[in-house]
Picture (cartoon, one colour):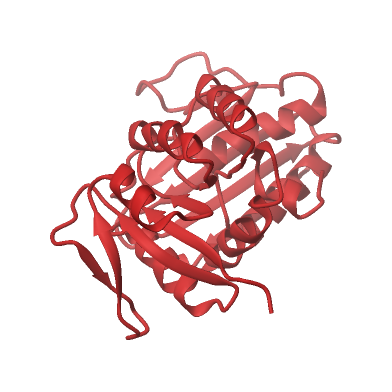
Length: 267
């Protein structure tokens, strides 16, 4: 029997962090050994399965030294995530990052630091397997349509817009097409921004409402027809199979891997 992979969760008290803590504790191939959160009070985190506690701290540095994990899973924010990367790679710790808002320059830095320190890093804008398949199917359709728009719908507490998944989808389908999509212009916008944002000819529309979780529609249009590819997230448990897979795979990688689709062999 192999030794369980030692895991620290960064952003452990957030909504996604708590799900990762719960899922990690239930997987026999993984062992949660520590947790970090800027809002931490006290120095221990009770485990959800009732089997004790793990060290909890506001400082990642103290946790890394204390518990020596193999992987840090990060669901925090872009600024905190970069600070985590710079520190964790120095400690030769692998990274699984679900934080959105990272720029291309940030990703280049993550790749460089991972390679220099001989560790793996998986950065994914979405860990839901259905969302990954949505983008994959949209890339197939992109070759055959000139027009497409994306509507992403999220809860009203989401910090960024458009979502990382929507931006990734737009970039991916434009790359497959090889040129920007056709973006129809209106002669007059009676309310500014009515046509949404634009990326490579793809119109991006963000909806933020209480009652929503995470949803996205990719709508292709052609003469006399439309094709709609939609993914709906019912709860945050949907992300956990993808996160757990990334934790188990990242320990065998070197450098940066972007997107769960690469781990699934869809590229």
